[in-house]
Amino acid sequence: MLVLFRKVGESILIEDVRFTVVRVSGEYAEVALAKVSGGAKRVLTLTKNQWIEICYNVKVTLISIAGSEGNGDKTRFAFEYPEGVSIVRGEVSDHPP
Image 1 (cartoon, one colour):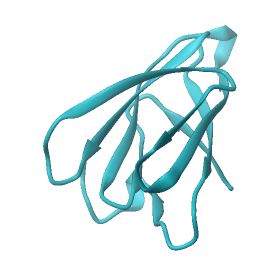
Image 2 (cartoon, helix red, strand yellow):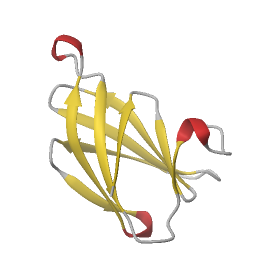
Image 3 (cartoon, helix red, strand yellow):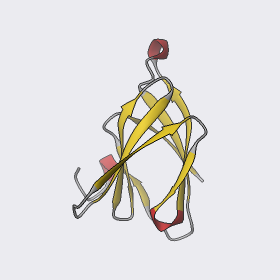
């Protein structure tokens, strides 16, 4: 399992799919999924402790939303994934947003 903090606009690259935090509220986080090569973007809403299974059998759980004075500007996600799947923070990937 991999646990990462992400703020609005920050992303994770899961193989060839970019997982980006779009909006954060005290109650939920909206994330966008899009292929690096282009194509349709899907926007999903997660609440705390809710999980989704996305591409490559990756399970993503929204663990927490934190921020100054309850603004909720930082999210914490857990990624469970099979061996061999590449997961990289967006700022260190070879694929610019």
